[in-house]
Length: 464
Image (cartoon, rainbow, N blue to C red; front, side, top):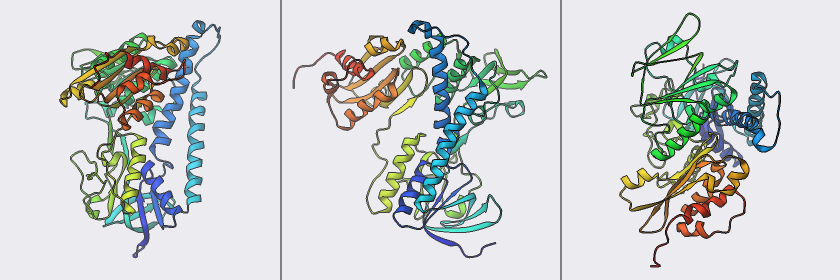
């Protein structure tokens, strides 16, 4: 057992987006860097989150399009979902990206340590190596980037019944004939629609009054209509009272309204919990909040000197692109610049079909904040490109500050919305008035052209 620690300029515990990017960046710059990772090379995004799920979303969209082929003038016969091919497709995408990450780690010159780290003192960890033995590592600066894992709520019978998390479902051993999804957040709705496209009979149970609780009610209602048209049974405003598995394998989900939902598998999509247990953060002087997330200030500094936290574990919005910006913030502060999380404009996309993309304030948020707002609305059916795609489902809306004519936010539910939302984000960052998007010359026919139509729905006001 080592007694003297190996010293590094930077020690990163956890190889998520922020941690791995910072590690490689500083290693390439000639700093001595060690990154400890339990074994998920590239982080959860590549292995069990964004990349594998979006690979399968692609498959689900093709399955959906094949069912609509006649409307596009095509006759398709004999198409079926093959679970082995799905798994191979997903795994090939993941393995390619894992291999690329591993090679980047080696090329950068960082010390990649595979094992489980536990803090034993300030900025010092003891690592139980995956291949046996231990190492004692110390950093002049330390970054904690251990991420989150699926959360299982305390519901009677849930553990004994053998429910699945998103990690489990990605292994795709078989396609369940009936799938019950507990939770109507991002993970829940993406998996629900994905498996409905693969042919499963899907029921979604959400305790709140609507799907996607952070969205405006009209946006959530538009997505609900899409789900119902896809044959998905959606139950909102009901909580799970108990889960049991019958002797024949059937899972029974008792709801608090007295009804029972049955399925062959149950996916629990009830949020994510921070990976901080077992890290020994008390020994490092790092404080946690009541939910186990690392407490940080706007510069991502923890309560311990020269110790930082980034990504999901630091309570940042749970998106890989936010973790990347956390890297920028920590790198700037390590090199003497001043950069913080204050005022960040964060877009996101829910990869349903069609996509839901958001940036800035919702209408509800803006009104609660005291803004005098005007709201632009547009049915996706009004966008010519949606007609050519034969996908006119959804609606777009944008929220305008009537005092300044600036865009406060936008919610786009429709095809390719994840690509279009960046144009709105850039207009907001540039503090352009809404009229700039109304009058911009945008390629026809594209989905982005819908921005002309969306903002043209607003009534012009007298020139100030």
